[in-house]
Length: 111
Length: 110
Image (cartoon, rainbow over the protein chains, first blue to last red):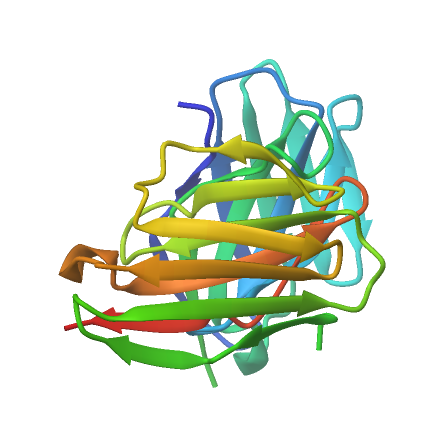
């Protein structure tokens, strides 16, 4: 399938620790995006990395992309309780018209 | 607040009812989408509209009927739904490479 698959499905860490989530996909892409979803709410775009980029930073977020392995990782440094949410990767080919999402990683940050 | 507003936030309907979900975006985007999110399943893209024209229908049953009267508004008309249609329905809009989502409508079919 075209959708990304996140790993692990659930992750529980202590506040202050780093959280790493992984995403694998199967087809060629133009970009890969990470979104966050608080429980029962809409998704919020976090960061986009293009297929010709290998690493990108935004605040406490660090995203890597390995197109040879068809995988990406999202690192959240110095986690906070407010980071508790589900995180989804989405692969894109042409604009946002064909974004394919996985089932997400449920992150719990314990205060 | 993402600029995409969905109403209602919660909806309970019987299998013989007819109801509509509404989505409105104030971002000037040309593309709007309906997604379905069920527990433990990937987010499913249902419909895509570009400049009010439907450009994608991902094999969605006819009991779901979208309507896009203009670039700012998107509706999802529901009729004779099944219990397995219970889910969070998300609307999104975009102008470029990533999407802005509404808060969703939690639909329960009884």
